[in-house]
Image (cartoon, rainbow, N blue to C red):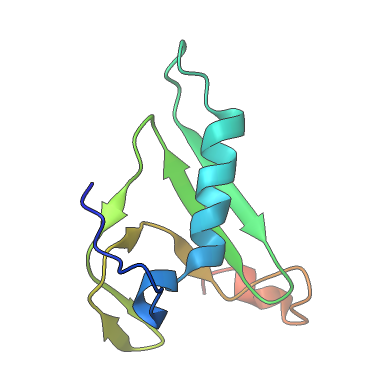
Amino acid sequence: MVDWCPRQASPGCTLFSGPAGGVIGFSQTCFDADEQTPVIGFDMGGTSTDVSRYDGELDHIFETTTAGIAIQAPQLNVNTIAAGGGNSDSSALYTR
């Protein structure tokens, strides 16, 4: 992958860096390179949950929409839902 980030990190370079760190963590600790079985990352925080998949290669995307705002920047494919461990609305976990 091309290093597109300048030496001094700009806000774009750190976009979703927490969830991306989670992907790197579970990909390095849970994926068995011999078996090649894809793994699912499930990172539940206080207000949201990040879900991602790793199959031996990082899944990069270049455009996403967050809170109705289109973001065009290279990033790892992490889907966030507004239902974390501290969420008091348990119906947020279910689709009606």
